[in-house]
Image (cartoon, rainbow over all chains, first blue to last red; front, side, top):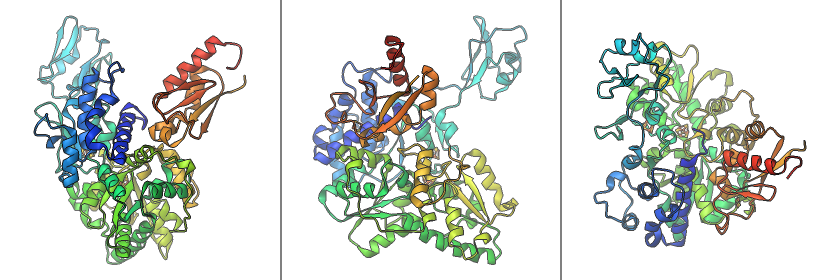
Length: 484
Length: 90
Ligand code: SF4
Ligand code: SF4
Ligand code: FES
């Protein structure tokens, strides 16, 4: 799906309305009225009826408040109660994504369908070839018995009219690791032992049935307390708004952050460290090294390709280096990483230097809620000047490019790019330990095709964002940039 | 035919609500309406503030404001205007 659709827009509106209440300190008082405010009587339903939209909005709001839908023990608990609980202590840790069964139930169940192109022909190869006797002709059309069908696809291959179609379930098709599957109750379930938090299912679901547990409300509370709090801007952020970077910094200061830092500075440290690690490992006879800055990829290796683990770089991520530096300079400061990524939430949960993670769309919603117009923000004086290539870490190929830039011998870095994790590229990765890379000694892996500029929670179109990021870095925009 | 101007608001509210994606619709709209158009981005049109114009993102064509603008709504509006005013620009 294109990044601008009703699911995205509803999500943003929900975030904006919630942020507005949080900034006014009226969350507990007014949040229970939000589902009705967003879907008032007489509004055009986007689901079967407005009542269902309201019910689902309520669950989505639970996630915005930081809770999983599974945390609900009693359907009568109002949202305001969750607001109060979240104020007392941070919502429980655990899975980042949560499935809203009420929304998921509208999705398809079976997967092979007979369309009305079926002529109920004489040959009937669908009936004769089905190994499970699942196809029958009923009232002049082939029917597939869902109970019996094992989705082998033989009928589809056999039909001379192409009357049988295969309709995959969007989230399952998008998931690169088979972590999301229908459970016995017919709703999708995410298997935590497999999930790598890539967020692809979230982007793919057309019913907004998958939500991420947000920390936005907590961050707004911290901002209102006016304690020292730093915004750590991922390199991808430079491409997320039309205005130039210093204006974005100006807007963040206006929002209440006491300090803004570019994570590109940490990316430079990552690259320098990783370049040394590469030299060292290669000289010790290791065939290649892979990047480790994408936490979805790191989890994919941990959970699905253990044989590749020894090849993954030990170098900490740009987020870690940046947060660590900020904490060293000012130990009492809170650090908020802001980026387009869901997997970073998991990485941050395991990293004591990072207190919160905000996504780009949450930041956008906060700006709107606070009435901050980026174009009117005074540009901050911006003197940070990390290595230009490090600023372009977020565009596929950027990590390898930076490694070359910091390497004493650029040509000694021979990169191979894995631009996006899907079933195919995971297969390719899984054979690398045995078959090698065919000459490359550094494998850059990004879970999102195109790089973080195409991350699951972006605002800008990935292409526009990639161009802007590279412009900001002062680098050329290669025409052949692979961005989907 | 002189290209017709379609103003897409790229103020913060409209941008966050997805107007960035509308900026790249030139070809799609032109081929749907078979007339030349010109897409221009604009700073906040001032329509997002009090909610009386509906929801962002906003697009303006002549004096018509489209709230919650989508490619379909833009094309629809253009077709209506051309039907009403077949000979001239709006
Ligand atoms: S691995 Fe990615 S697509 Fe699969 S369930 Fe987890 S977040 Fe969703
Ligand atoms: S490519 Fe970037 S945005 Fe996507 S999962 Fe990896 S780190 Fe996150
Ligand atoms: S941002 Fe579009 S009208 Fe204000």
